[in-house]
Amino acid sequence: REAGLRTLREEVTRQVLPDGMHFERSTGYHRYTLEFYLHAVLLAGDDGSPFLRDALARLESASLALRGPAGGWPVIG
Image (cartoon, rainbow, N blue to C red; front, side, top):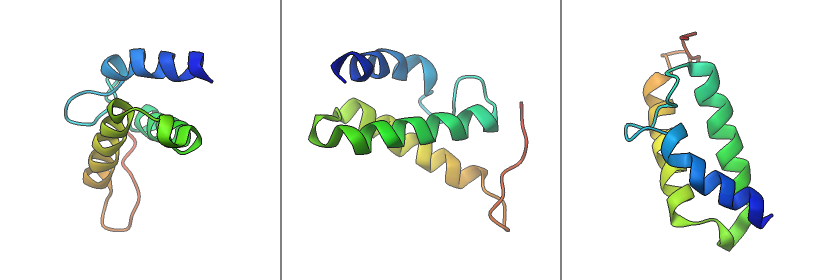
């Protein structure tokens, strides 16, 4: 558990850009990364660092911006 959280903390700055998008700029990778970090924070509970929670908030914000009127996402990347 600790090794996994440590790895996520180390990778979050490389994987999640300041604007909340995944660094690959791919909607598929973005969705996968959002789901992965969401599960990690939920499973970590109070041990989820503010660093991870901030990245998750940015991922969610970018997700809302990607969503079309019908709720779908464009296929990019």
